Length: 136
Image (cartoon, rainbow, N blue to C red):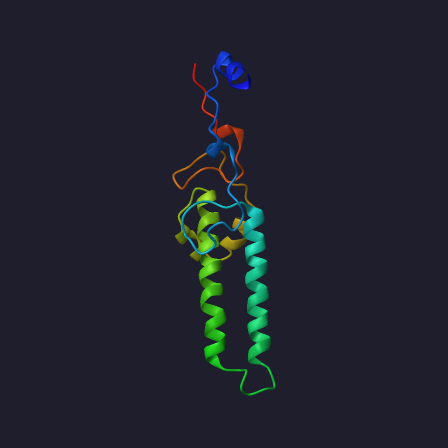
């Protein structure tokens, strides 16, 4: 019934796959795709929590705990996670992931709206209706 009305209006109905928004943290270590500001802000908070946990761990009074190897075990995946999330957020703005090397660009990533609709990096993570195709 609803598809018939859309067809009469000249609107091509979206498939179930197109209608669904991508889940948050679906591929957190991947550099492909787009993410929303909310997911990026949570990612930054998670990274900062891991960073301060690592600092506290290294300043521990117990000598056997403050090893550089432990710091690397925490730091390498945390940095990879942050860089991947920042690249995907850059993609949401229509920019290359390399833009995150610009000083203070992280603030732009946190506060700037993403591009509406699809871009070369993928579908809009908000699942906007602007992705719906009109056929007249």
